[in-house]
Image (cartoon, rainbow, N blue to C red):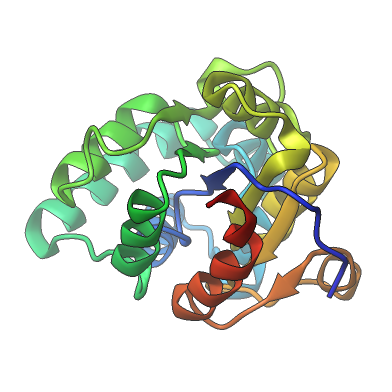
Length: 227
């Protein structure tokens, strides 16, 4: 565990896999979209793409599968499958999210979202899960020059919250996202979803915890000096 700063005045959440249980849905949609072209996207191949902007992930898929793989067909197919799955089966909040949001509300701590998803998909998920209009700032990958692991999304979120990045606590589930938050200078807590943090990431963040329930306890201590 790394040292903590003296004052923390905002919390910034990753979205997919951290707030909402969307990653398994993405994985299934991506795997299905690849299989329709005759390509196998295994769990092991999918894992490094978690938290990476979709455009960058598509470049990786094209590089791995070769010239026969159509990125255009893939990009057209997977969002349809993803939305159909959510429309049919719904979407769950990650355990402990409600308690964390209640803590922030009770402490008058502003919070935002910094995500590798695009605005349209984020808005759809927020509506489905009843979270629309709750965040004080939302920054999506289509609104910055560089996606994670670059710090742009987190820096922009801090700016929109009018809080110094070093006074922010970031909650992340992916290696790429944790690196982005650390590069932005934020106190970073990792709550792994589908993939465990790499050793270098685990050693660099404030803490790695199994769920948002444990993250809530850490936030109580980090935010204690804010009254």
